Length: 88
Image (cartoon, rainbow, N blue to C red; front, side, top):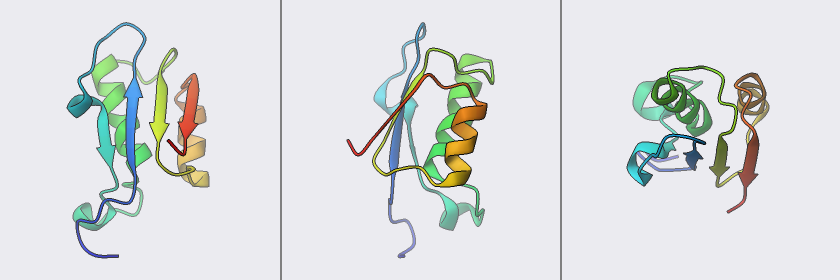
């Protein structure tokens, strides 16, 4: 994979707070951060939790371009995200 290549983009919708597309968007940053866990879904969850000021993301929906890996799927379950839409 080339450095800086975007391999997945996520977008999270929140129930009560408006996020612009730029605020809600996350992408894979494993290469840039030298972090094996910096998948787009994990980055999106971290950003959404900070924005919501709560790690419980009840009422939120995440849209992803690819099916989440087992690590990311587990993180989505733990975040209590209401809905996952992939392949969009």
